[in-house]
Image (cartoon, rainbow, N blue to C red):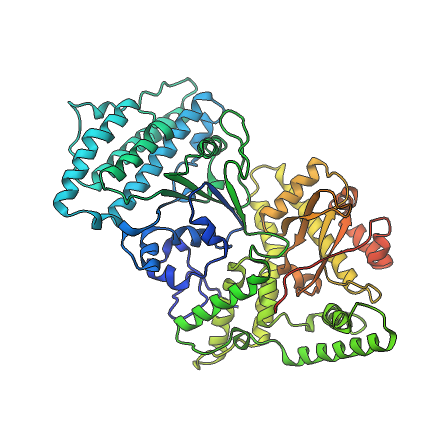
Amino acid sequence: MNTVGVSDLATNPFAVKTPENLKPQELVDLFVPYPEYENLQVSGHQFLHGHRGSGKSMMLKMMTPDAQCLTRGCSVKELPYYGSYLSIKATDINAAEYVRIENEPSGFILSEHVLITKLLGSLFLSIKKHCASLWTEQDSHSKIKEFAERVLFKRLSYAGWESSSPQTQPSLSKPQDVIDIFDYIHAETARYIKRRAFSREYLPYAGPLLGFQDVLLPIIDELRQYGLLPDCPVFFLLDDADNLSLQQTKVLNTWVSYRSTDNTSLKISTQMNYKTYRTTSGIKIESPHDYSEINFTSVYTGSVKENYPKLVEKIVEKRLLMVGIKGVNPRDFFPADLVQEEAIQRISEELKARWSANSTGGYRAADDAYRLARPEYIRRLSGKSKQGSRYRYAGFDQLVHISSGIIRFFLEPAARMFADQLKANNGLPVTHISPSIQDDEIRQQCDNLLIEKFDEMKGDAETEEDIPSIDKLRNIIYGLGCLFQAHLMDEEASQRRVFSFIISDTPPKNLETILRSGVRFGYLYEDTIGKKSGMGRTKLYVLSRRLAPAFKLDPMGFSNYLSLTSNFLLDISERPNNFVNRLKTRGARGVLEDSPQLSLIEDFRNE
């Protein structure tokens, strides 16, 4: 299979570029908003949680001034908010040398100072790029000079910067001069942190110490007063906040706790590994009092539930149109295997006829047909004939479900499919992707997730102690996949699509750690569901549908969940082969005979 990385959108409509590398017009042309996007654009601190590729960075970049001006057809002065973007992983504030100050009380002060220098540096870089239209060239010199002398130097002097005294003040007349000051202050601090890393003795810090309330907020207020910023709230768009150290994370949480959202809001994205929600004083910030949350990962395979297929459809239509492929329905561009679908339809008619004859099964004949036809087709292929590999994971609807609510998990395979189809066409234009090419790519993606990624995780393990946990996660994923497969093969089961489970008792810490890793690395998705007692809610874990080909599972439509005990899961993690052997001899219901009954939840389906 060909590999497509950062490709030219002019030749491959599904090529994935990181949002940081997209031009403003490309951002606007490619962007299809989630419903939550509107809520994100109102004042207030917010966290955006989701796996890599779920669309968080795209949303944050769309909130920057140039993209907003294009979208709204307005000038910077007319914007309802001003978004200043900072990618944490692209900075040096998570460098290894910061570990030295991690457990020191003074480390919190330095961490806040370092974060402030980065935020102000990125803000003035944005002002330099976007705000020139707010003033004439002559005005800009006088405004910046007056702002520096009356506000900036005074605030920096209060914070301990000696160069801000009247005798040593540098001459500032343009935004780059201010950027240079914050770059210099940050560089001096970074040099001190690095020197600390080489010394066993304490080295006193003599530089300035910038703070959120005494420097950042007053500077932003004055920037508006001097006309250097539009008269609107400032949103700091902090991407990949998982990359902050524990101390830096607590500092950021402390800012969230201030609730200073009338003029300044923090929009913080994470990749499911945010270190803590406690402040520097140990107090936990809570939603909705201090912040609100948007989760892009749930049992519904996507934050938009039943609207997710429609969102993917719009994205595909936009991308096809960009390369000149007009009037092609996404379902026609990614066709299902016709022979397979006709066979499934025949089974569906069988089930309807059986229901009419026996009046058993679901409430309506169509219920049995919808729930059982595709699983029964897979069972027949995988039964006596041993031809389960003949089932093709192809067709727009299947690809949408397999992407598990993460748009990148649709686009990246689609880009490789397009490249393979282009090669197979021998120069002819691509009007559709053949089912065989779709199936090949989805199976390769599954193999990568189940085999290569686990090996990569073990190679990247920070300590030897982490490796057993990775092995146990692999065992649980393998065991669950085999359990769900055995349930699909059970002819007598009324609900054969199973992708989810709850834990019926209180899980021990070691099991929670394993499952948390599964969520973080995209093998499991976490949501909540109401308890059967009707009192309270409990966690629901959903296996990624990207693993469907490995276990011959049906990724479509309705899904059931099993109620499993902690010991059951821990046994799988320790002895997966023994579990699979029991599964082969006793079947799914045999190994679950001591577990509570199967329960039904509804996942999204196409209308």
